[in-house]
Image (cartoon, rainbow, N blue to C red; front, side):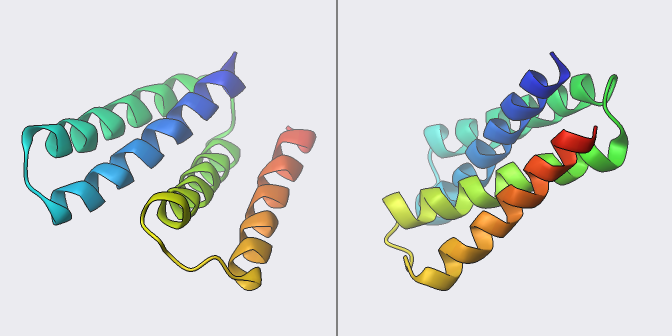
Length: 104
């Protein structure tokens, strides 16, 4: 269950970062709700995951999900560059996170 909590925490991180972007674009209730709600969900589920996972593994996977998810959101919804090197380095982050799961 800890890994499920960690994935939910990563999704919350992506929502929170998306909220930051939205607040920078237009300051409205929806943007601030996304920002605060996303990070609240993220930290709550990260704390739950860390009850059973080591701090280093949980933090590395959480940041990896947040990093890759945020880049994908930027590429899909905000017309950020979609070049080979970005995709290569995202796959390296995902591979490292998967490796940490394998040895945990």
